[in-house]
Length: 365
Image (spheres, helix red, strand yellow):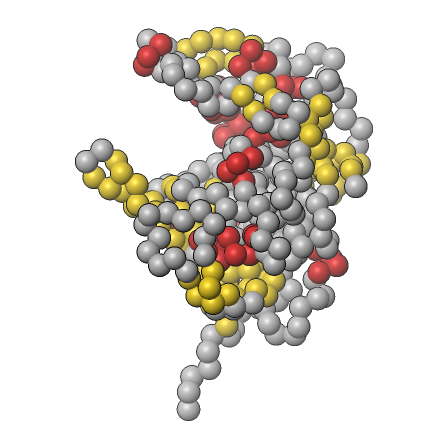
């Protein structure tokens, strides 16, 4: 099924409606104000049940509520892409439940108001969610913020411990029973049409923002930072001189080797981050066969797992993130991609989180 959608959200509700998309006659200058959400996304629905179809499929009391999906125990889970720091080749995963959706700005708003926790950077000065982003995943929250949110959720769910997932739990749920490279199957199923700027996609990734920006800002001038090998400084050029996209969604010019830094070092990208990135409302794409939304793309997801990376003569410990984001290429959005880490104390415009839940064992008498 193929549909063309314009996404708009109020603080606590979202409305999706079908709209006709057309290229602008006069693309706006890159100095014009950015729309805080994608102007249009052409969605191709992946195979699998819709959220409403799968919401009643769980046995009673196997999860805190029907916003979680029960995952069976996997006594011999192994990563598809093992790292030298993994330790044991296999991990025994007990049964757990995983949230269908990423935590949204609206969810996090309730937590902020209930607890007095600081609002994320990028919200209004009064601690309100920017208009239109209520149902988008919360970003600009560090791992400790996500853990505090999970502790608050635990206080509201007697009998359950709600927490961030470990890396193995996320990959196990994403690969699913069919053990696929993407949550919906073995191929990305992305098609880009350069003639009209439309992109068919089952996920939000760098090809979406590239398609939209080439259509809206292609002729607009953007400032790109240059690396030291090119003498530093800034180069002014039209966006379509820097970015291009192939029919399969592959993006060139996003991040370049050598002297130039690519789109990620342009003023347009910086302003995209300033409006909390290029996220889409959670659940905009069809759920995976197990009923999970946004397991690929949209935002990277914090985990409780760590990765050790060399930094010159020392080693740094980062928090492992999984799933890819609106800023990622397709390879980073696979169910098996690993190695991405972030400073757990940092906040980022492309990192959010979802929760898992474990039943609390009754004390022995």
